[in-house]
Length: 285
Image 1 (cartoon, rainbow, N blue to C red):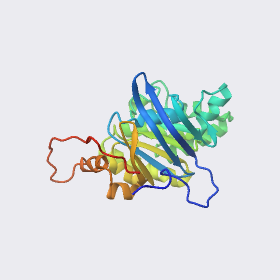
Image 2: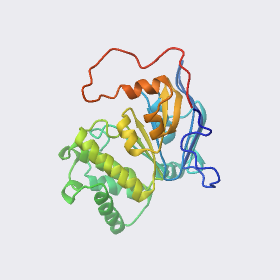
Image 3: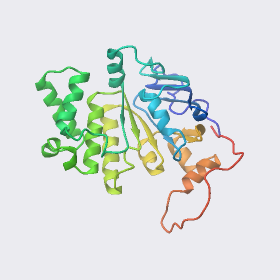
């Protein structure tokens, strides 16, 4: 059954503008169309998952939201401002950085190996807020406590931290800018299952405490279920299904979504050959 508005749209009758409004996004890399006519909205304090197999266009969309890629066509409106065009000044770039932050997949390469967690956070606080040293120290203590890092871990270099601890530093770094939108690009995919659960619980708590809007890029439907209100399913750069997360995951309509869901291993699962994609399948939105 089709939705009447993109996933994440604010309820009818509410005046609050969405935190993020992407319309008609298209991205071409030479002859390759990576993203084709993708639209969605994320309300204030809302959460949206973008799911699909590798190569479906998920990370390209994330990079367009953050500003690491420029759309070939379409618009990205974040916090009421158009980010489709390059920033016009250093001040504009800093403002964009404060509004939208991203946590990448790999906690082993996303941190400066020469900086402790405290130094990493201090750098962000100086860049985005210009606070004096005593206020920065107080905020660093708040952030490390929020993400569950003790004083010893906060003073350690990345090489002395586990993968889960490094990802907590990366999350704290993103939150230090006090963004209104947080992009999570496969942010727990590289972690062990037990550590994944800890980080997912942390992210759920952060969402409740800060009311930051989440955009979750993932192929893991269990992660999607735990963290998001709405979901869009991407296939070959196009949206084939969208809606509230429980409805899409529990009652998928499109054959691709059904196969994506069926690919999740269950107790007694035995591998079998097959493909996710069927020729001539129509989108369900």
